[in-house]
Length: 244
Image (cartoon, rainbow, N blue to C red; front, side, top):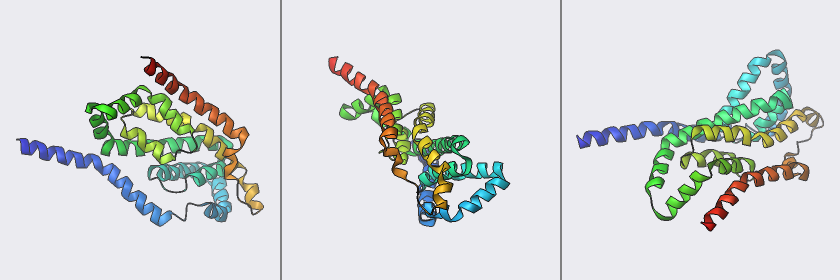
């Protein structure tokens, strides 16, 4: 009976790992097959064709774009920034930013679920029953999930795929992840979508867009202000903990 239970548990474990394994394999194949394709140079070569297709079939183009962007994020393929620019180029700042945020949120949520089913739930459960520093770390994360989630989304230096995987490995609920992702990526998505909206003129001059615009003071300082606001509860909780 015990052997049968162990066999069933092992089989269920492998079934739960299948989505994550599929994502890893697809990501590896995608990087090898499309690593050089999802680039600004490709967008520059085909921007007229994309524009013509959008004008002829706006709804289908929007659906295809959102689906492609979801795949890029789900499989952590290189080219998410180019995809965001493309959204602005094809659909303008609005509704381009809506398409970009929607696709990025759905793709991030799919990757989050694959990681949580494949490893996150077991890892979080082990951290809950552990002792010492690991247990204190897990308790600290659980007590500060909202500010932590918003902070890793707002800080430009945190890679997008890291912000998708880390919450899955520490037991963050899906609804918190989705809400914090959808809201937290808006500032950056709005900046790059607006850059993409002016891409037609840039390409006509044979130039490349300035992607460092997000580090300009008039853009970076408000984002850093949002980061400080997101980090404030962490500071308050830390101070309270020391007092206790």
